[in-house]
Length: 107
Length: 409
Ligand SMILES: Cc1cc2nc3c(=O)[nH]c(=O)nc-3n(C[C@H](O)[C@H](O)[C@H](O)COP(=O)(O)OP(=O)(O)OC[C@H]3O[C@@H](n4cnc5c(N)ncnc54)[C@H](O)[C@@H]3O)c2cc1C
Ligand code: FES
Image 1 (cartoon, helix red, strand yellow):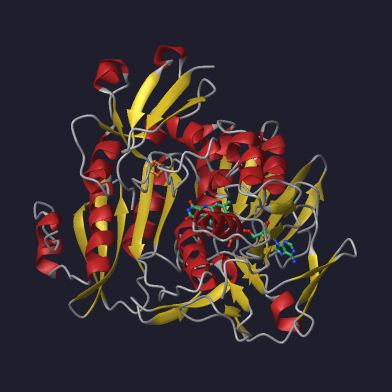
Image 2 (spheres, rainbow over the protein chains, first blue to last red):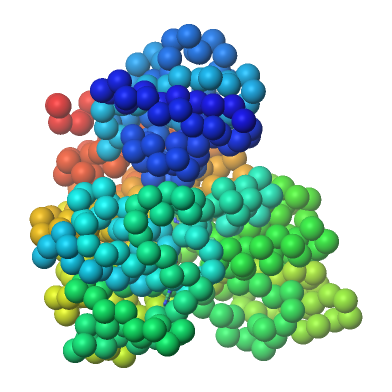
């Protein structure tokens, strides 16, 4: 199973296994990663699953769709070029080892 | 209020689970018991009429938290067990398995149940209602072999099921008693857009039409309409609204209207009893109104509000309500409550597939529905929360950037 690491603002890192096909958000919620709220459960409707993707991984992600891009305009911590909504990142072997950084807050 | 209180939560759904999680994360150390009559771990309902029906999500992925997470939270789960009665004098609830649980504080998060079709034949095999996971599983099991689906009720759930079924290539007919789709919640402009899109996908829509009854016709069913027509169907899905589960509260003498009446701190007429989520007739101080809301946003936010009350740090309830519905490639997002509006302003053009509808009372923006306009939706939420209105002329100009109205900071 691919693993994904979540790095909190204080540097604390949690690495979790996430089944292929699940979203990064689902993996976080399943393992109780506190920095992801995911209030809409992955419907791309709430912007409370914001992450900053580690620059090393940026080139390997599927591009954002328009809806995700719009929602990122309204995150609690302002977006950066490496911002993504973790519910829109689908886990696959190609993303094994992915590192994402958590914002200070989601709401 | 104390962090060591024994808290019993009735109803292991979206609100009940959120309450337990927030209480633990905020330092509650006393015993927490979550009692639910469904046998399943607390799960998300929205996908039941969306990605669960298509088969894209399975039951494991619907669970809000896996069992290990709940164990870590030290929440005692009693699933598959209904609460039958509240004994307020003894501070106890009676469970269906005979056990009695004592409480210092009791939280009712019993949600709603579906309104059954009030017509003959509603209980026939192949006539399904949709509220829970078992209902959705039954529909999913039957949908595969069905060729013709009749959906009774043109509300969110009926329309979402219709969209999924068209995606699976089924022949779909919607029967709605009122003169437009989603009549109670959106402006006619939005109803018409959705009717066009559904029709464009090949859905047959009967408005102003009542179902008189359903009968078995050989292998199939026949749905009799009040205009004399009879629709053949292999599967019928009924989505005509819900009723709040207030009986426990009412029998215990708590004040109930169309929901358990609570104040802006989620407190019922008994200070030891709170109510949250779909079942709560609650007060929102931002909107200045009391009402019942059926949405994930409200279940989550009011659970947090109740947790603050239970922890002795009460905060008045004041979020901007929001909701979404997914049909085909249409994402409908609603911010605010449009009840009481006297005018409607269109922002953008429905023909483009992306637009918003703004609801006004005088010059005050009450609510906005956005169709494939997530940015409008998110900004509407922020503007409504800040108490900023959007001048109707500005709202009507799609080039006008709503963001410029946000207060700094
Ligand atoms: C098909 C469907 C699609 C939806 N789509 C959306 C959507 O897109 N967006 C959105 O925002 N909202 C949506 N909703 C609404 C949303 O799911 C609800 O608002 C939310 O689940 C409410 O949470 P709750 O905890 O109040 O109630 P529930 O989640 O219903 O939980 C209540 C629980 O209490 C249990 N219970 C009742 N009585 C007792 C008793 N006496 N003893 C023990 N247990 C009891 C019930 O069986 C249930 O498990 C949808 C709902 C459905 C059914
Ligand atoms: S979980 Fe809501 S947008 Fe990602």
